[in-house]
Structures are given as C-alpha cells and as structure tokens.
Amino acid sequence: MIQTAPASLRRMLATSQSAPRLARGVKLRHDETRDRWVLLVPERVLAPDDIAVAILKLCDGNRTIAEMAETLAEQYSAPADQITADVIEMIQDLANSGFLIDGGKS
Amino acid sequence: MSPTLDQHHPQIEFDPNDGLALLEGKGQPVTAKYGIPLAVLIELTHKCPLQCPYCSNPVEMERARNELTTQEWKRVLDELADIGVLQVHFSGGEPTARKDIVELVQHATDCDLYTNLITSAVLLNREKLAQLADAGLSHIQISFQGSDATKADRVAGFRNAHAKKHEVARWARELDLPLTVNAVMHRQNLDQLEDIIAMAVDMDADRIEVANVQYYGWALKNRAALMPTIAQIDRATQVVEDARERLKGILDIDFVIPDYYAERPKKCMGGWGRQFFNITPSGKVLPCHAAETITELDFLSVRSNHSIAWIWQNSDAFNRYRGTGWMPEPCQSCAFKEIDFGGCRCQAFALTGSADNTDPACALSPYHSATFKTAETEAETGATRFIYRNFAGGTLEAEPQDGK
Ligand code: SF4
Ligand code: SF4
Image (tube, rainbow over all chains, first blue to last red; front, side, top):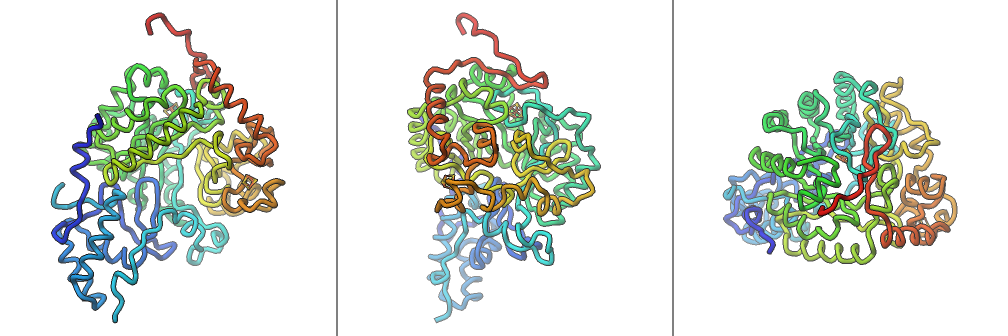
C-alpha cells in the first residue's frame, strides 16, 4: 500500500481563499544577464511569461487568491471574478507541478 | 475589452533551457553565440566513501592533492555568477568530503547563486547539515541505492549507508531543506522501483529522480552486472506512469528511458557545448561530466590563463562537437540532427572507439545492432558480481556468501 501522508498535506487545492506561496526550493529571481524573470527550481530554470510573473510575485503566503485577483484586476482593468477564475486555474497548475503550496497550511 | 488573463493565458515554459541558455547575454560578446549555461555542475573532489559500481567519475580519478583550493573555488564561483550562471550543483565524488563545503555554499549564496548539494549523505551529521542550511543551501539531493538496506548497502559497498541516508533525509525535512531522492537504477534494483517511489513519498521528498545508469566510466566496466532487461524497462515505465498520475503535486518524478533500448539516442547534455558544462576537482572545464573518458580531447582548466567564458566559447574541446558541422553520416543528412545532436559523444567513443561517430544507441548507426545484442545478452546472462569503484582501479566483489 502506498502511503501518501504527510506529503499530501502539501498539495494545494486552489480556491479563492487559498494563500499560495512558493514551495521549498523554488525561487523567483530577476536574471540580470538575460534581463528577464526566472523561476529557479531544483533541477531546472523556468521562464514564466509576464502575467505568470505578476501572479508569482503576489504569492507571499499571506494574500489570498481573491486579494491577488483584486490587485490584478486593477493592473489589467478587468473584472475581478473573471480574473479570480483564471488565477485559480494557473495557480492549480503551478501547484500540481510542485512550485506553489498553500501558505496557510504549512 | 482590455486584456484579461484569459487572452494572455499565463505560460510557464517547461523546457526553456534551449531558448534561455542561447539568449544573448547583454553586452557580453563572448557569450553571444553560445550563451552561458544557466546551471553548472561543480565536482569538488573525487573522494567518496562509497564504491558504487556505476559511478560516473572517470576510472582514473583525480587525487586530492590536485584539487582546487578553497580560494580557487571561490574565484570560480565569483566568475560563474558574474557571467550569468544561476545555479550551481555541488557534486563529486562526495562534496561533503571537502572540509570547506559550508564555506563554499555560503560563498555561492553570497554570489546570489541557487545551490544544490548532490550527496551520498553518509558523511553528514546533523550539525553539518544545519550549517549548510544556514549557509543558504537551496536544495539537497541524496542518492539511494535501493529500497532495502541489505541490497542497497551491497551496491554502495558501504555498511549502514542506507540507514544513514534515511537519517539525513529526516534531518533535511526538519531543517526544511527541499529534498530530491536520486535513485540510480539497473538490473539488480529495477524491480524495487515501486518501493523506492513509496520510500521517497514516506520520507516526504519533493522529487525523485529515477536515473538509469549511463554506460561509461565505472558503469561500462560493470555493464554485464547492471544492464536491465527490456521487460524490466517496460515495467518500470508503467510503474512511473501510474505513480506520476497518483502523486501529482506531491512527488515530482523524473525518469528517462535508457537509450540502449530506444530507437534514437538522447539529446545528451542538450547537445555538446550548447547548455552545460562542469568543472572537475582539478579545475578542468568539461562539456559533460564523463568527457574525460574521451582520451583524445584536451580540456582547459580554470587554472589556465583563460576565463571560463573564453573556454566555453573558444576552446577546441567545446567546439569540436558543437552544432552539426562535425557530424558524419548518417547524422549529417538526418532530419533529427538538431533534435538529438547525434547523441552522446562519450558513448560513441566507448562503444565505437571514436567520438566522431554517431552514437550507437541510434538505430541508424552501423554499430547499433551489435550494441543492442550485446546489451540484451548481458541483461539475460550477465554476471551479477560488481567491480567496486576505488582509487586502485576497482575491486571485484567477493563471491556471495551462503544464506545471503
Ligand atoms: S556514484 Fe557512488 S561512488 Fe560515485 S561519487 Fe556517487 S556516491 Fe560516490
Ligand atoms: S542518425 Fe544521428 S541525428 Fe539521426 S537520429 Fe541517429 S543520432 Fe540522431
């Protein structure tokens, strides 16, 4: 029988109330040489696009997705509830890859 | 309407190494053509208490007296950060066999480098690990030789190694260090794969790298004892697929099918001199950690009067197999030549006697069928005794004892 606790506690199911933060070993950094934002993870360097960077910068483990969506709604002049849905989807993708965890739970 | 996130659906590129590594560095003409790699492997020493029969170190290992000094490594780290390297992987041998490991990790952190420690863990105690964490270590990768202690310790050639690794993994957790389990797989442990993945989940690792042995260096000496069967590979592939589905977001699983059993070779190192280099204990800059097995090449050292960027960009060893111009047939007229770059140079050298040839893992190589048949035969009938890695050129494992 495969035992999945305690690692499963880390897995985030993104809702508007989750407060994501970067997982252990994941760093968002501006790369001066190549002049772009990069996400440093254990064996790779990823190149998030501008919107992903805008979202990742807000993932501090305190802000909820709902709050993030408000900020982004202002930034992109778009309706907040629509943005919330998009952000949830993206954050879930990032969580599935192990880059984001729920700040509230750990 | 103004742009919504929907129209600009956020993207994270999953294999950006190419695009990113080949980007031109700002105001750095020297790296204009082949951008400086994002990550560099640093082999601090060839010393290691373990004796893994598949070790990727050269059979002729570097003696401690030739190793770079602390000051020299610091200068190397400064230089790497300066030219745009973002990650350093401290490896070996066993990197913690260097007394200055904490100091070097601290220095890399001070240079704003992402640091990864690739370790067998057996030399670590809790205090040392805590010091490494305090020095800013970003991630630790611990190698495991199997899922059960007796078998794993036999492969490592080191008593109680397995238990010790578990202990260090637990400390890593307590110290909140991100952890990757590195499991090197071969015929004699591939059937434990399910248990090894479960073990990684149990120890709350973030990732597991299921690494199939690459057959050069020590592993080539031990190929008959290590080569998996096709049935094992098929089963392992299935195990990994199932586990990936089940463990999404819990454990990231890295797995590449060994190329002896593939139709086309791997894009080894992402292509020679395209996105990777490593530095050996004595400071040689290599396009691949096994490149010294190609005895006809000369590699420049950081102790030479050339900068690392110059060596990367201009040295003969890097340019020899760069791009596609060097390729013989069947690669030269092949549609895949910019996809796999002709495969692995070290494997071509080891199996055909010349690094200029197409990697025999490719079905189009004239050496392919012979290689494949040898592999198949070895997998079915090969001996199981290991030749252990050591500075004396290797020691054959004792005959199995009764009741073992
Ligand atoms: S593969 Fe084994 S013997 Fe070689 S450096 Fe790693 S732990 Fe040591
Ligand atoms: S012939 Fe050369 S380029 Fe074509 S698939 Fe084989 S190794 Fe790759």
